[in-house]
Length: 296
Image (cartoon, rainbow, N blue to C red):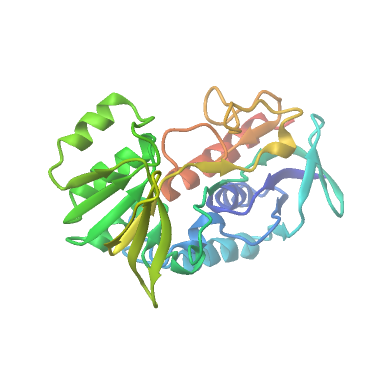
């Protein structure tokens, strides 16, 4: 029996563990892959308060070591099911806790084209607010048509010299206010009915090939490509007992409680406005504090 079981060893989950351990609780963190979540893909983190610059790997490792040094258990096992009795079932064992915190995160949806993974951190980014400043006065492109893509393009327009906004359709899904604001930016160029079909470069992304829906192909020289085609939460295994929205994110009336007593949520896996490192660690600290307060 654990006081708290945390599913997910990203920043939200590890922060929750840190807070619970400092309150002398018995904590187990379960993670299917490796600790750190999406932040380990970041070459540099320069927007975290109090830390001028750090690699994503170093940030995650520091947090992991804090948890381990406080006596936290971290087991790399795949969770396959949880029950409303706060049992967490993995492919290897069954664990029980007084409280469970779900912090499974979300993965950025990929373009799934050749060389995409190898250029991550070398011209490709999935987070404009994280990495935009690395492209000051350079030419960049954003691909996507929702609110995030438009917000990214608007944000980058104040940093980069030029922003190409590429969308596979002839109109955006984004709210009209974002579209209007993007159109007011002189350095944003819209490319409709098109997809990025090829990534070109040696050690760094240098060009992208764009193919229109009519089959026309052109190549654009850019320093950065920001992919904003959505995220994919990893909450399917909870769907039988935890309320999810239409996109698979965990629904919470206050950002902490799920629809099941004693089961809480933190980080990118929940419905929220902003998915950033700072909001993830905030979620983790709040979820752990409330879970301990309500623990039975």
